Length: 87
Image (tube, rainbow, N blue to C red; front, top):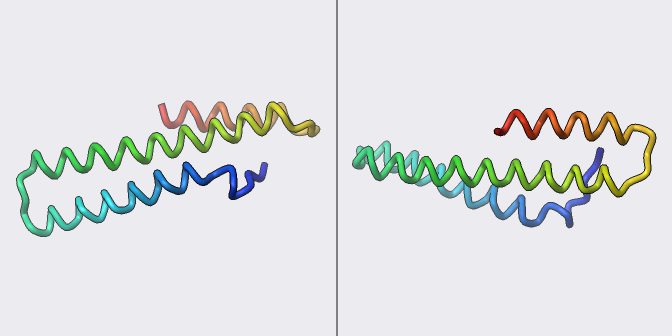
């Protein structure tokens, strides 16, 4: 299943935010910053990635439900499996 780029703007924003947070985590470790600060940033990065994944799967499921194609049931099953892998 293909998802058009215009449907993924929110996902891309979340991923870019997570990329910036991960860069900050790496710098903090290199600078030997306090572990609590590092873990706080790492947690924020992890949440941003999770939310991007859930958003991507949600968009895919919506497309599966509205598209009429012969592989719709297979696509939904694959999306459900991916969703559960994030949980």
